Amino acid sequence: MAAGEADAETAPPARGKVTITEIARQAGVSVPTVSRVVNGRSDVSPSTRARVEDLLQRHGYRRRPAAPGTRAALLDLVFNDLDSPWAVEIIRGVEEVAHAAGVGTVVSAIHGRTGDAREWLRNLRARASDGVILVTSALEPVLHEELRILGVPLVVVDPAGSPALDVPTVGAANWAGGMAATEHLLSLGHRRIGLISGPPRLLCSRARFDGYRAALEAAGLAVDDSLVVPGDFRPESGFTGCNTLLDLSEPPTAVFAASDQMALGAIEALRRRGFRVPEDMSVVGFDDLPEVRWSAPPLTTVRQPLADMGKLAVRTVLRMTRDEQPDSPRVELGTELVVRASTAPLTGA
Image 1 (cartoon, rainbow, N blue to C red):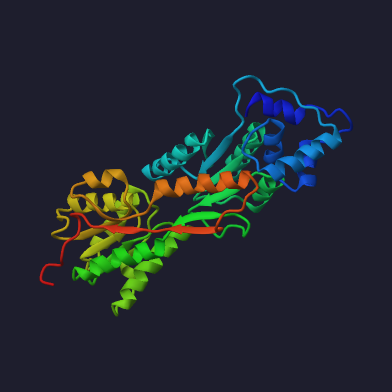
Image 2: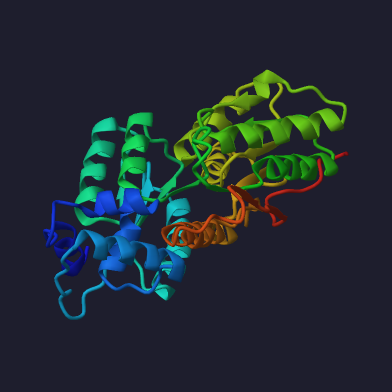
């Protein structure tokens, strides 16, 4: 938060006790929008600026000059966890667009704990961020309501659950990606296809499973519950899940792991037990993280445009800070199957 913005919010008006919160209410805009007008920022529409300026003048709101070289534009980027290369790709996209727009970014992790979320919200209020991008996380309704009261625009990337109707979301075509991964393995002759799924609380996990099921049903196959094992998107769960599948009396001939990291864990489990990929078992991942091009063997996977999701989220939240509505409240970017060396036709198929 720039010094000028803090001064503008706390400086007393020349007449009365009106605050920028009251100005925002009367103008029908967010508090950050009024703050941008007070601090002379250019990213406000002319009609909104005129309305806010009129109210500021009528209430006699006194402004203090901003310190030279200060800048108020700031976004909060919030993850549940930051221990994945997946998060790095989102950050890369966010930073690219935010930097080009002259906007700073604060990255936080709330670890799914209410106490951490409340601490983050206190910090957000103190630094007067212009907007929030929430990634695969869900705020409790009371915290979401506090954001609404503050007038801070919110965009959710890859929502964990069903977000409020007034919250724009950016995601990927997870159902189509799950179906494409499974159809690829079916096209190679595989019929016993294992699935290492993601956390069921996440919409993306459920969509990938639904795509897997749809592809099997389209091929005239029912889902074998013994071939579906739980995971949490981390390599360890891919390792454990693959071992569970290998312990079956009739193991699968191919595995679809719902994240690249789980796919890498599955490949390690196969290697330790003397299985070759793809000769003995084909493996498909999901994400197309940069490192899977260099895995042994290079991983067949479903590419989801993580950096592009971050870019679109920034553009959307910046539009909202200008009191403009996003083009669409629900956006899904396309996924794409990338075939590499970890899949092969079923021997004898």
